Image 1 (cartoon, one colour):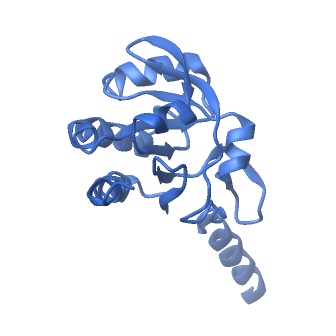
Image 2 (image 1 turned 45 degrees about the vertical axis):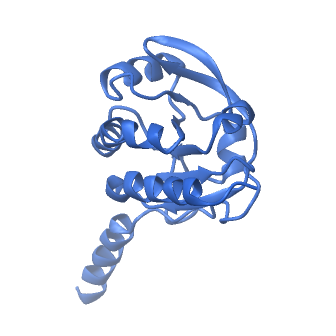
Length: 185
């Protein structure tokens, strides 16, 4: 009976464990450049990281799945903070593995067309090492909740990975403001 109770408790504990953390790119690393399909204002476009960086820093945030509770709350928080990001000279884009049709709808309904969302292709997910994995290391078919701030120099100025959405906007905005305050070279 004790052994059976232990096995049940161990099984339940394994399911309750959070997914393993990815080994995201470290601060200071060169951010992999990419082009992907993006959506904003009901329209699709090609998002090119290299071109976006010419305008200023880029907040690249990965989220697991459009229209889920945490991802909806995070997108709304980013939308609410867009005036602050623009004042700091930053471009914001959210990426998930969702299809472009889903991203078109998510951009309008949830992001309120304040910023684009795009498709995280397998190449992008691999390059940024943001595949969400189970405790045993098996991919879950979605990205982890990881935010990057990439400076105009193409280097990662901040990385924050946490499945709780609540600090992603404030940490990203703080990092962008720090970049803006740095003297230009």
